[in-house]
Image (tube, rainbow, N blue to C red; front, side, top):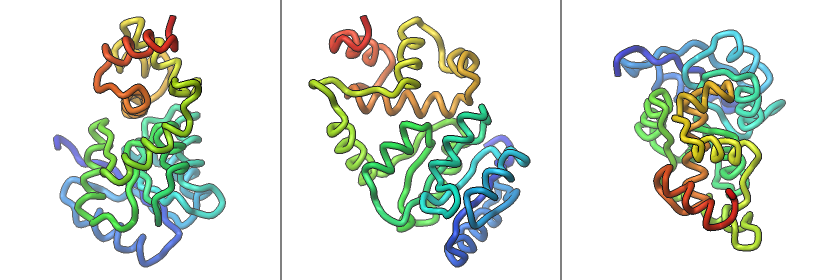
Length: 212
């Protein structure tokens, strides 16, 4: 990694947050810029500090981790978000990845996996363990309508721009979002359409009459 990654941590469990804080501060490539125990404080400080990556608990009081993620995306901040949850929830995973999370892991994940997700998020990559992927696929199937995947308005907007030949940075500029957020939307699109690249996504969308 070419430069130090600034990280913000928010979790309402003091012992767990302390462990995360210790792991981040001991990592040579990370710099902890702040921490909080609730979502409202976290969002205020993330807006002020603009960390590269925010490591957020899904179940925080005030605003939960996905609420904070939604606000980060809405405000056009470039902060990538790694979400941690006490348990697997297909609905929470679907909501998180649809909103643009860079990673979703359970709190049972080892520290190495969490730190790897932070590193990946800083590079604009998406991380989902196999058990999380399985839950996401299950929820995607539940959301399918008439055999076609149901896309959020933002996902359809990204898909349309991909079909128009725009690159990820160009889409990010058009939508005033971070490239990591666009890549997360693309990954969710790929999962919904059952493909692994942009060209296949457009082709699948046209076959299913999602794009005309």
